[in-house]
Length: 304
Ligand code: CP
Image 1 (cartoon, rainbow, N blue to C red):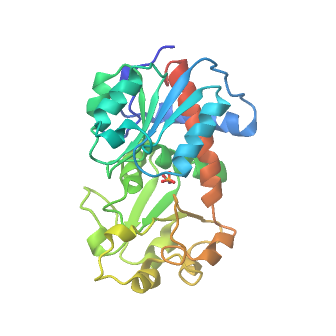
Image 2: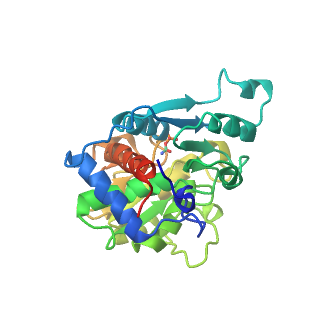
């Protein structure tokens, strides 16, 4: 196996580690071939891949596990409980000890308290960021755009509206970076206190204005643990919620997305899950192919 260090941390915000548009197109082509059965998963028997989930996850963890299984890689899943973290071992020591077992790659989800880039500098195998604090969730952004590519046949002409708590969202942060690489249009909408000051970011003043503009509208989870009582959840739902009433402003041939997990009837009404424009489970399905393509490329030597 050969891997190229410079491609190892799949992250858009660092020029050292970012992927180019050509490399992402290659990943999309591979994921597309895997999804249609034109390309078969390779069998990398005898290899292990370490999946370290230091924060809760359902979709990302299980889709990486599925991707490993389809590529013949045995996943070593570490998710905290029953491990030496309970004896006070640090996150960094944990990562370094698992790296000493020589997995082919490491997939890590963590909060801001682990410096993933510093850890990457200390180990030889590639790390895939599976959601890192507020910094980014690059495979989520890739699978979102792959979903638009599969639906519309291209991503360059898409207009993605992201609604909600942009400030604390690693998904929004990764889309801000990825949109600059791939060239799709991006706009944000949400309560003023949830809007960061990113240079050049496009902000829609109302949800209606954003929905009338978008080819894809994505609701973010309201992070109830951070929610400020000065903004009631019923007010949030009225102004920013994906309700049947609010979604009348979205074109019939546009799509509705959510990275999950969903707080039903807060940012997205349960009835909207039956809307023909909804793509939530397609996003999850496509996530496996994107992650499978990334693993396949990393083991085969990295994107060219
Ligand atoms: N979208 C996403 O990252 O979901 P999980 O937290 O369940 O992995």
